[in-house]
Length: 474
Image 1 (tube, rainbow, N blue to C red):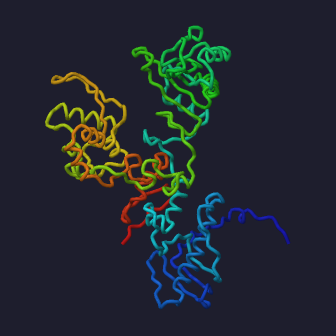
Image 2: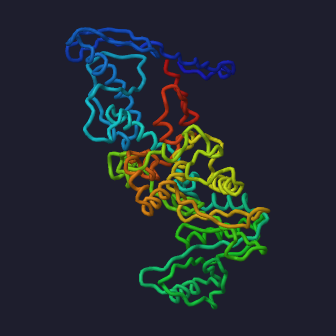
Image 3: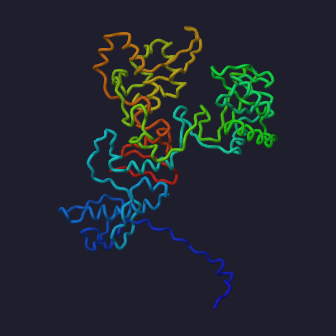
């Protein structure tokens, strides 16, 4: 007979009991291969060893029953897309297994003949790592070391309001010539869209006064969509202008901060993109899949070392006095004597600009910082301000290896001496990660994929707030 619940029954709440953490793995009725209704209880969070003569069923119980069921549960927790990267084992012949978490295993195998083989690839643990980085990794720009991601127009508007409140800015949309198009045709197209100003090579010009430019030289052209002073009262106008700029710039807009104290080409420019791109340098990226984290495949390996992580070069021992000394202590043999004030100033300028801690030992610098030391900073110039004992000047740092190559070209004795010191050294492009630069850059939590892969058993690392820290290996 049905009845309505009373007031006291409505107030009654079910008390949820906290689930108990399993302390044992309970196997009942295992009959895989030569096992005959085996029942066993194994303590969790401890090392257990199965021993016995050949054919007694050790592997059948450990690998083909317990691991097979744990691996099956792990694969079932993945998306259908991720399952294609993991080999799934058949369901074992067993009545039931309790207290078993999704599992992975290190299997005994012969090493492959390829020099790219590692413990992680041979045991297939690296397959799970690739899935983790593709799903949990935060993409970073290899050059700027900043997180990258996509943005909606509303998110861009919020950023502009937050970062540039009270500033006078130009909202511009970068445009490029289409195949076969001339700059005169581009100016006509911009006028047709109704815009009256453009920014050519950093200079704002009326479209009616657009210059004559040739296709041979490279020029930067932006459409000035709006000029405004950022404040919350103009959010509606700002939103419309942002959407218009993104439409003209094909998903990219630039915020140019007007500063009357500086020439227009030197005004600060902040780039925003709806694509997967770096706001600082503007480089675009593709969405990475697990295959892009494989150094056994052209989809993921470093193009210079082809996944080996090393190249032939001079030993670092030739370049540094001691890997445990810092740059401030004169670790670089090829840097001018630091007792000279100008040499110390140049080192401070170089390290400060590139974000290198000159007080850390060379061995503790990360791969990106070591790459700057070994291979230089390209065409970048460093400015040294004038002081009492010297005039102001600019300088470039070409890198230690290019210095040696140039010295070897100029001097036969140096070239002969270097030949005896050549060997395998860390790849200058990937820093030993073996991967292409965009695949080596993502972070899981606060750690890069190279830091996670090279972590010792005693090291702790997090991949997110939902993940537990691994316990130290005893």
